[in-house]
Length: 212
Image (cartoon, rainbow, N blue to C red; front, side, top):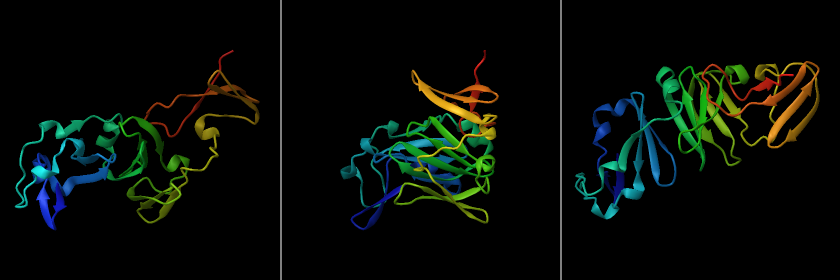
């Protein structure tokens, strides 16, 4: 990894881990102080808060005065999914939301610690599961460049639709939130909104039928 210092490229300390694998590396900002890069199915974080920029020389030689922990591998909650669906790009949507575009796996959202937030695929409206680029616009919505199309994911839309794809069946009669739990009454029974749990075989949040 290199930075520009006094109009010259300077190599960052302990970034040699990617030297021989640069063709397969995907970079992106994880926060204001950390950069996430993924290569060959392994995710790493480079922590700039541990770096002393005054220690960097201007002759493309890094000074190993920073701790080895400045770059470290991390295990994302969705890492197994990434092993099967290669990450092609990712975008920091805001301070606590990261979007990952994958090959044949749609868009995966995690928080800044790597915990799963959401999965969007063709099942819920994405035109193509191969995502080649991502961009967050000034309204906070996410544009995705697909194989042959461009798709807008309206992250700031206050309305979320739940239907048969979320296992909610029948005409909805009423909704109520009770003690932190959301309940829906329909002609087929009563349902409750499931917690956010990553499952590569499902998309979005689901509802469960309340047992009598």
